[in-house]
Image (cartoon, chains in turn blue, purple):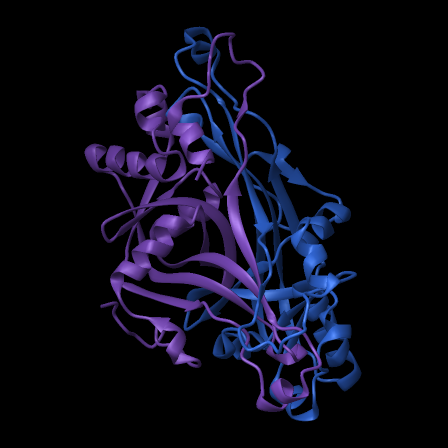
Length: 216
Length: 216
C-alpha cells in the first residue's frame, strides 16, 4: 500500500486514487520523462527531467536543469510527477469532457548520490530507463564524465497514483436528449523508425536494443 | 521576443533557448496537458492539468487538482510547464545519451476569472484546446455547471522555451573508435481510432471533429 499523508490524500474524486505500490511502479516504468518541482525564492519551478526507478528509489539525472537540481540536492523538498495521457473523453456536454490518464506524484527530499558505487548504479538505472541496452552497447562513463555528472535519489515513500480509464460520464438528461456523440479518442506515445546518425560509418545496422523498442 | 528574467535565462546550454514568441505559442498549442507547479506550506506540488491558450493568455481548468488550484488562485506564484518529447538520442557513449524535446516554462500569478463573459471565453478556449469542435457539437455549459467550475488565467509575459532537435553529439574519440551505434529513436504522441461510448444510441457515426483529429 502507498502511504497516505495530507498531500497524497486526494481532496476530490477519491475513487480515482490507486493505492497499491505496483500501480505506482507501473506508471513510473512506462513514463519517459518526469516533471520535477522545486521551490526557489519562494516560487515554484517545474522542469522536465529524465529519471529511472530501482525498487522504491527514483533516480534523477543531475545534468538536466542543472541549477535547479543543485538547489534540489540541498535537502530541499521536491515533487516529482509522471503523467501518462491515455485519451480525450468526449461527452455529450461540454462540461463533462475529460481526459483518461495515469499519474504518479511523489513528494520527498532528493539526496545527492555521492558514494561512487551507488552513483554508478544510479547512472545505470537512468540509462536502462532512457535507453535499455545502451549500458551494455555504448562506451562506458569515464572518470572525467563521472565526476562532472550528478545523480539524485528520491525515496518513493510518500507517493500517490491517480487515474481515469473509462468512457464518458454523462448526465441522465444528456443521455435522454441524445444530441451529441460521446466516446474516447485514445492518445498513445509511440516510437518511430530509428534514424541513424548522419556521421555513422558505413556498415552499421541499427542494433536490436533500438529496433526492438521501435516495434513496441 | 520573450522576456528574460533570472528565472527564464538558462543557466547552461544557452543555445537551446528559443526566444521568439511564436515558438512559445507553437509548443503550447501542440501540447495536450501542462504540469502546474505551486507552493503549499513551503513545499512544491506538481499536478497535470488541462489548459488552453488565447493570444498571450493561458487558461487553466479549475476542476483539475481542485484544492491546489484554489491555492493557486489566491494570487500565488505558479509555474506551468508543457513538454513535448520528440526523441531518444542514442550516442556512442552512455554519458552523451540525451532526449530531443521542446518545452515551455511559464512563471506568473494565476488569477481566477470571475467576469461571466471572460469566464465563458476561458471555458471555450479550454474546450477548443482539449477537444476542437466540441464547443459547437456538445451541450453547452448550463448555469449550475458554470457556477461550479473555475477558470484561471495566466499571462505569458514571463516565459521561456527550450528545445533540442538534433542527432547525437559525440566526442571525437568516440567517432574515431566507431564501436557503437548512434542515432535518434523518434517519440510521437498519436491519436488512436475513436472508441464510441458503449451507451451511445444506435445510428450515431463518429463526427468529423473527432475522426479528423484521429487521422492527423
